[in-house]
Length: 356
Image 1 (cartoon, rainbow, N blue to C red):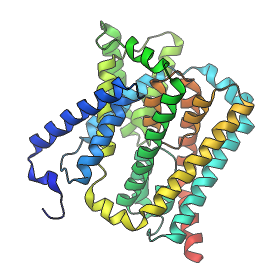
Image 2: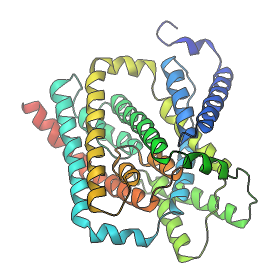
Image 3: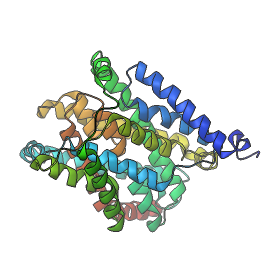
Image 4: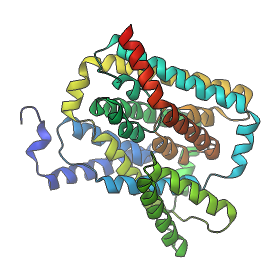
């Protein structure tokens, strides 16, 4: 009890009640204040607080996967082959952004291992700006401390999601209020809703079966985009289902911030925060640079280069007036590049840091 925290005094049903009630309250307040991704940030913040106070409840892995699949279907509605044209036309700039982000994350991982007490390749995996869940899943196979990698990854997600929501709110101004007012929470549903759910379930199952990192999000996204752009089927995702998915993703991230892991990471927390802020600053500068050479606004460029989780950035982008296709194309390209280069980079950084 002394170590576990105050929340352990309460049964699981009571903890769930507190989590749901507090998340509903904070999410509603954020909605009233027109903060983008209110239904992600509110539950995430409540989850962090309860996790640090020792809450024992967790989000089922199946529910988290289902939420990612629903989010993949949402992204699919905004993707089209036309987004590839500007990326291909300006491929040197896109490649430069990707390589700079990879180099910055590699340098960040090396510095963390060199000037902190992080063991083995943990710093390298923890600082990789790809899909957080994918990085955590892969890190254990390469000798990293999965607990610390998860903490570092989701700490960055928390920082990036909060910063992106604030920047988006400032960028949107009064538009946020108009968008909130335009939401229809319970629209009439037809056969497309059932077909969308089937796509989400099938895509998530296939992604797990094929062991594709972040496959639960990526496969429904890619298959749904194909169906949507070809005119075969228009996906139908009501706001209430999106709100549920956002909430579950927020809870999953927040509840990972347990007190034991926090105490374990406490000695290197300042270095972790400096690393995250440094990477966010660099990506912000690259976003500004993109607006100088590409026909994109600052908000779109900022979300496209933000080193957050693919799912959290997608949620924030969906709630704002940005070029969703460009944002998701850039984020997905970076995720794939991290997945391809991550293991080799982590091993190289580990060897270099050990030899220094």
